[in-house]
Amino acid sequence: MTATHSPVDPKLLEILVCPVTKQALEYDRENNELISPKAGLAYPIRDGIPIMLPDEARAIED
Image: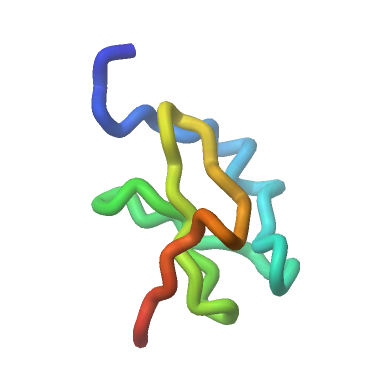
């Protein structure tokens, strides 16, 4: 794929949870991230692969 934002498999999104809170994640298509509202973290998606490491996540503000 040559797209900068490779799509994430919707089935993968259904089963992924935040490693910190174990809560469901929200897909942010604009920023190509998975958001954990409860943890206040945004996990990056690189080449279509979610990086589910808290150390790699970006803190988000409400």
